[in-house]
Each structure stands twice: as structure tokens, then as C-alpha cells.
Length: 278
Image (cartoon, rainbow, N blue to C red; front, side):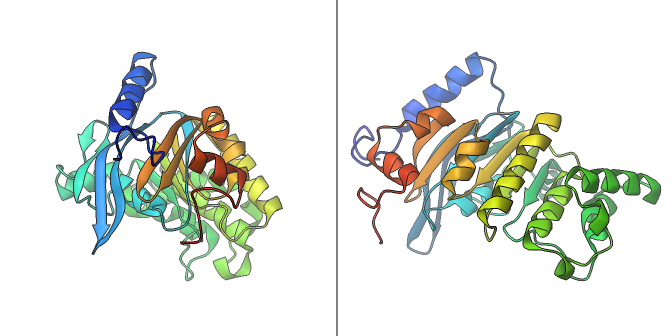
């Protein structure tokens, strides 16, 4: 931290905790809480003391330049990376104080849509979506079929159920990955740059789908992106990362109207400001 945080634009920890306390007081619930999380790879400090909560039944978008720690943060939330310091709280439990078995159970509450959909090339779309149910439950195949076909219908992929991932478009792979992320009825859904590799129209359609499904089912959605239009369209809350620090967090309108130099520059795409080519 630099002084009171205004020099670098980062949000002071005390202010973040105050925001969390205020949200708790107004009834906002937090399934996922981040407390002073730090992570370095060698001498490179990727996350440098992040503290904030993700509001339940809301879509929180994490923005920031490439390489600023957005995807690393998601891996901490789902328990794939252990922080060097700090806590990741899920359902009020520090996931790294839990046993490996408890951590595996907690992960069942998460759905994850990876950048490229991360589909198994040897399985068709149907079997890709059914995979979590077959691996983590003892449901009969008839019940699995009912669930999978329902999710495929929800994302508009019933006609592609028997196709291989290599036979469908990039947008269809994303939708299949979304269906798989939802198939266990997760409390938390994480999106790692879902708009990556999509043209503007398909990005907009995917955003519409995210909004539609969230409206129908609720849940804590956390979406990592660097696409400003996506953030404008889907976000209830926006967090902005820069150099491993949280420089803004709050309701979407606050971020979009922020006077902070970095936040204003990044959200406007202006070449003039603290963010350069380095």
C-alpha cells in the first residue's frame, strides 16, 4: 500500500473491510470472501494483498490488463492454487485450513467455464456435460440424461448433443462449457474470460445467456475479463485489478463513473494515463 491508497489508486484494506461490513449490514450475503491474499511466482508478485467479498446472487466482474492476476485469483477461489498468505473463505470456511477431502467437497459447489470451454476432445457434447454427474454422483443414467438434456436445451445445444467438440464452433464450445459448469447446480460459477476468441456478436449472445441463466437460477457469478462491453452488460459489481492490487471494487455504476485515473483510463480505453505498454 502507498499511504492512503490514493497515490497508486488502490483501495485501502480498511476501506474494503468497511465496504464488506456495510454490505453485511444491508443483508448482502457472501459465500466467497478473500482476505489479504498474496501470491508470487518466483520474484514476480502476482497478487499483492487482495481483500474483498463476492456478493451472493449477483454477477461480479473482475477487470484488469493482461497478466495482472485475474485468472490466478480464480484459481485461488476454486482451491487450485494455495495463497502464500491470506485466506480464501468459502461458506465461512478457510479452504486451505480444510482437509483435502473437505476441499474436494467444497469444489463440488463450484462450476467453472474455462477460456476455451476445456471440453474433452474424445467425448461428444452430451458426454462432456454429463461428465461431472457421472464422476461425482451416483445418479442413474436416466436422471443424468434428464439433467443434461435440460442444460443443453437451456444453452441452445440440443441439436449438437452428439457432435464432437471439433465439429462445433467456438461459441458452441463456450455454451457447452457453460452447460457443464451448471450441471451440478453450483452455488458459485466462475468464468475465466468467457468472451476470449469470440467475435462481438457471439460475445453479446453469450452475455445474454449468462444474464438469462443467472436470472432464472441465481448464484454467485464471478466473471474475469478484459472486455469492457462485457463488463458493462452483465455486471452487478465490478472489481479492477492492477499490478496484483485491487484498485476499485463496488457496484458497476461506481466503476463506470470512477474518477480514479487508472480505472477511468482502463474502462475508456484511453491511451493517455497511468497504464502504458510495460
